Length: 226
Image (cartoon, rainbow, N blue to C red; front, side):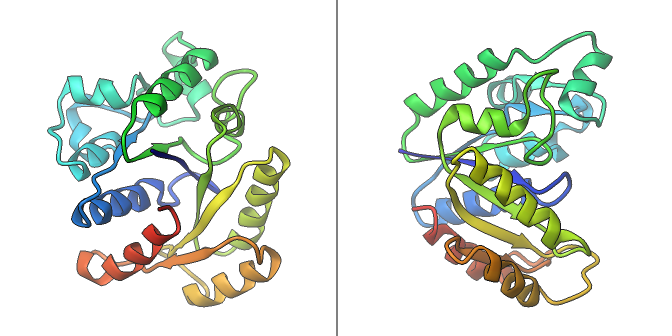
């Protein structure tokens, strides 16, 4: 069993896009993985099929229902805010120990590959005392870090990698997911970042709605996690 945490340098960078691509690729290879999105904000059951949780379920070949959503995303909040703020809007909190225990239970019972997709970026608060980084460190599993190619991404990426290193979290691969607005080609961003973190594999994902055009990139990405 391989458990991997998918995190990012910030929100709306492409964690779900990358996780869905990995799921689809591994399924096509005959190695169907499982995925969790334990915490999700900005969630509305009426549009659940288009939510991160819904997209993960569909990638796994599962129906999007209240039950299936609850199974992979127990902590759901309506406000599109950081989890601590979104929970506060509903007079709720995330019990960090329960969150860790939920994930650990799924890790222990999983067969094959299990992706645990985080929420927002590496340092997003979950409650008054814990961030996504604390969550990842408590699970003691490696990470995939997803970055973009927007202006400023190099600083954000190196900062996120430094935060992960400070907690001795292994980064299996850094995924540079092409942003909608990018000042330079993906390969230039990869070359620059790689100079500063030569020990971490860096893979690029082109921005395209054509699945066949990105299959090769996801196929190569899968090699880093198996």
